Length: 112
Length: 114
Image 1: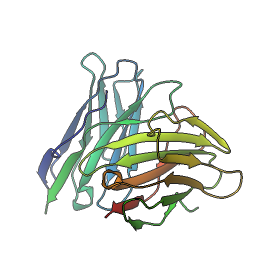
Image 2 (image 1 turned 135 degrees about the vertical axis):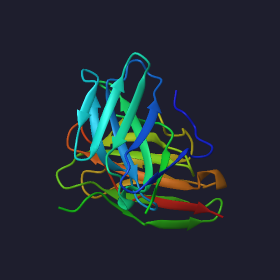
Image 3 (image 1 turned 180 degrees about the horizontal axis):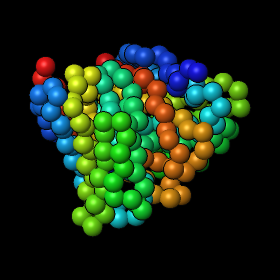
């Protein structure tokens, strides 16, 4: 099932430091995972995705790690910048399914 | 290339009125998804449509809610006889293909029911 958040976990990070955001998913059948960034008043923006046949994928300043054994996903942001301040969501789906299941959001606040 | 467009961006309705939300997918995209987001929660899937067809409406309430994606024009999410619990942000996404194809999200419509 999907998690329902009451209060967003918040990560405060100094500008220039690395950020790590974690996500636990529940559906063992999920084989495609995406991280989205949502700024205040805007729609979710795609950051990076990973398929279940991989355990790590890197993009520009971001890395996603997938641990299928414990159903855990993480997003690492290198050299965090003020523009990275947002809510970050992980989402999952599986082959043949078109709907995304979103996890609880994580608020990232970058301190200049 | 314009992204996904939604209008209105903000919509205020009184209880019992109808709310009509519009979504124009990205150019060339024929797959449209609607999600609802309550404050401080993740997005919840509502419905997936292709042109003139509802493919998956498993996340949409059976009563008062309907969606369409006509051959011409935007996709419409319609909420009849709105109640306060319908207050939320409604996001539309579109994709080029079905399955595990990247979904591009619009800016959302924020519905407030008084």
